[in-house]
Length: 432
Image 1 (cartoon, helix red, strand yellow):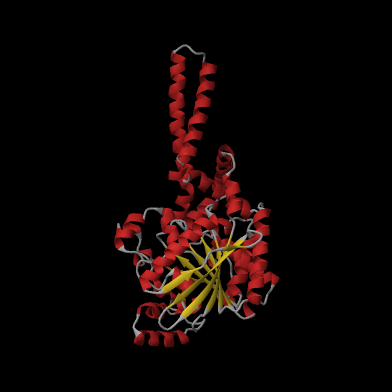
Image 2: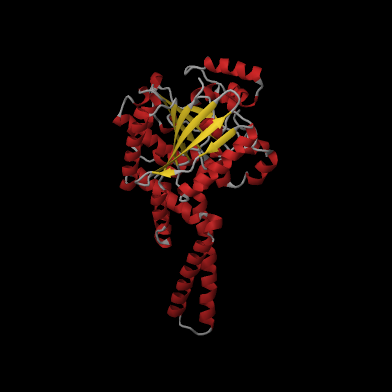
């Protein structure tokens, strides 16, 4: 029952910061985790593979009656993402607008809205902001044109000068307000997800195929007790693709020795799966839904507008798996319970900060704890099946821990108390 060696394969979302920033955040949050539970946790320096596509480090975590070693792999996509963000501003703007209105007229945005109105609002936000910035720039350009006309400048010259000013102002605003608005980044994200859904990104597909083979190799050669593929944000559907393609390479993947678990957190599956052309992706969801050798845990939070909550990644795509379905186990997470109230109130409206809470350290002990999942002694399936026992292992006295270990031994795939992690959060409208 006690995991002595765990292998984590982390799949990043559409985040251009990549390895350096992620490792610094991970190291900082690991220290917070150690202080919260009074554990001794040490981390090695990252080692990059010869092809530069993966980086790995190890974590040693010790407590009174257990010790766990974690091998941590970070799968890298930041070079591809940075290439997208280096595109000319106007190319990004016009391409994203064309895609957004295509989604509107094809009814995809409406399907987003029915699945999770907060996410639909979030994906519309950059276009609304772009409209306001364009309207302001247009007002300045119009006033400039009227001023030129008042000076006797012929209309064609005044209009041409105003048009040039409009382009210059809007381009400048887009460029120099990006760090505050993330507008161009979000537009690039829209373009990428649409192209990925339509299989127009062979560079991404090729890398996913290589990562699928990497997973197969790890499963065949690892002495770990469990292998956990963690997909955060867009990494949720990327991790799903990697695991599904690995199963196609080796249908015995989950039977070689280490238990294989997919953990998706803050997922946004519909931005790929709701496109009519994404039949291949939906087939992969169906494969994981019925695969008996794989466990899939999907964690969601209503406070995170960048994930779909509440959403069933299988039934929500119209996939009928029948009695054979065993995945995923859907776990609601309430951030209010894992963050101190004063800090929660400070960042609850900072959408990116909230979104990353899934992979940051807790401030209060709780059954959902990313670093306990990564570094703790309890297998992920049992942790989600018996959250009360998992919490007792971390915070209880000797008697409570003994009770908890015995309770965990009774946790099986057919019985889960995962919903105990959080009650469904009350409506924002009802609570005011």
